[in-house]
Length: 152
Image (cartoon, rainbow, N blue to C red; front, side):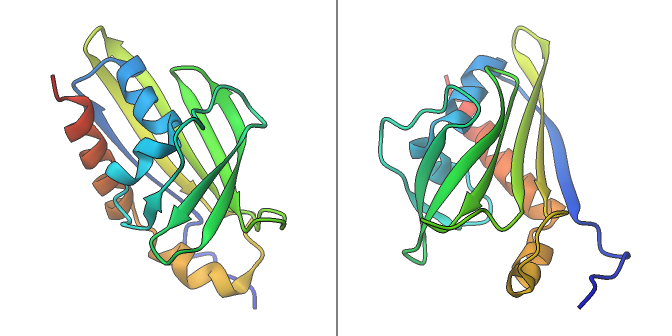
């Protein structure tokens, strides 16, 4: 099956969050914090102590369906950008990528862009779920992230 060109394989959402980039990045780069802002309601929990600090790091996350995902960090700039490719344990990542980019606007405001890119996804069994990851779902994650980051 050849995926039609009318379906974008890169989906993103952006919003300004009233918090410093460093505070926001801590919530994104610490897998144990991710279920608290996941707008897809797909993440159950992750063990403490997996805070990402470099490209090529790997962290594990348990999904709400009980499956475990190993997430391979492919991009990393402290406080600015992080991206990872999930995979089943012991398997190569099937080709989708989650990315967070933070652009400080001033000391207390940060433009945050959340992107889901399934351009390289080859497993056709995953296409339906990939298509279901919409800008609205990414925006829900941004909104939940903002609620946590903007707390005093």
